[in-house]
Amino acid sequence: RFKLVDHGFFWLSPTPDKPYSSGFAAKGSLPRIVAWAALRDLRRQGREVLFVNTHFDNSSPSQAKSAPLFVQRLTALRKSTAGAINPLRDVVAMGDFNSTPSTSAYASLITPSGGIAPLIDSQSLAKNIEKVGEQSDQDDWRVEDGIDHIFVAQTPEGVTPTVTRWAVDLRRFGPNDFFPSDHWPVLAEVQYP
Image 1 (cartoon, rainbow, N blue to C red):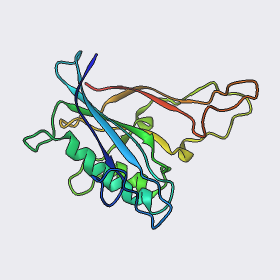
Image 2: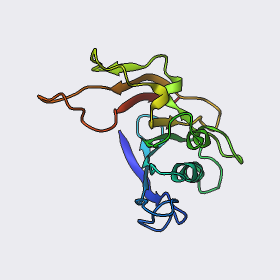
Image 3: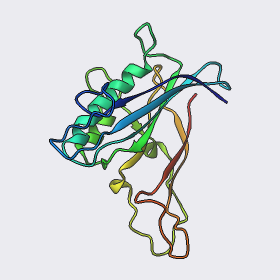
């Protein structure tokens, strides 16, 4: 269904083009990467999807400094060689942003700034939140505490994509009923026009 058009990496640091450069915290920060791929959707007449995945550092001020860099680079990746936003390039950006909706980093991701279009949390576009595998003793997952997000962006024509399903996976596994990770996986089914 997809054909790779381009791909790359950058690091969430003061030197984002230097491989393995570490973050914005004074010390103790691990290198944090952003991986991206532009894929041509062979079913949608040449439209492309820019898929982006990241993991922000969990220390301050790393999130607050990583978020503007992330949005700035994402905006550049959406542009065509002519410098305008590529009207055929949609965006899906996901990962562990280590930022709840109440943080300044999250606000930087969803607020327009300096002509840079904001991202939209796919969860906010969903009609409802599906909890997969919820068990009677699981009442501690709350949207406002989420740090894992799937963001989308409007098309250059101003059309917001549709989110037909948004879910969080609360299943546990094995004889000891363990969660598979220290994070609950989130899923979004996104439809661009």
